[in-house]
Image (cartoon, rainbow, N blue to C red; front, side):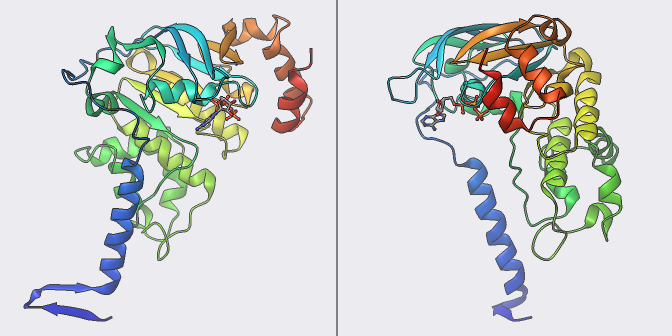
Length: 305
Ligand code: ATP
């Protein structure tokens, strides 16, 4: 290994370490990078997060073209509710959860968390109240443990293990060459898409946020693991509100409620078991999935009445 000696031996940095640090910084910047359309209001106050009640009040949003991606949507999610969002491709599911994170400001209407308009609170406090699991999980060139602990650096080892177990990743991590100390990335374990998603879920379980948002966050898992993760979410009970965008409908069976979005509006809303019997879009999608059609085929066929 080359060493750059800079004055004293203590300040020596190996080039490999430096490269890893740069990788880490680059990843961190990527995490921080968000659309720059949103700023803290001049009088922004920190969000006083409580139980995690969410409200969309007549929300309108478009990306700048004529079409409204969210078209007058009103939705009230009680604290602790486990809500699934489904609907065909382009319906506005991701847009809804991007608006809740305030990655964009709504053009009309309001979004509130525990009675406070998200437009009026600091973005730092809003981020602290939400545990977001995207489809693509960013991992740092660090140990698996550090990658999970990133969500809450002061978490105990026991809390970290409990989060990993709930996210169905404790088993595979313990089988890695150095277990939780295994380095992730080029010189460490190359993790599959499903394994990365489990680590992303463990982060969300570890973060003590009242609201957990999953955006296709379990799509790379096999159906059995996906159901297991959804059950773990349900077991969190009233302590956490969960909002999950999912394509595989069977994984939402244990959820309290599902809304079906089409054209930026809610077209169905109810318990999954009721929607399955209702003769609408959810039932059509459910039947096509049960017949074993691919998600793309279901997407295409379900919108034909
Ligand atoms: P999918 O299931 O395919 O992820 P979705 O239901 O999540 O779809 P959105 O991604 O919310 O749908 O998209 C809603 C509408 O907004 C679509 O018409 C889409 O083309 C458009 N849209 C989404 N993101 C952008 C963007 N960044 N810029 C412009 N239009 C966008």
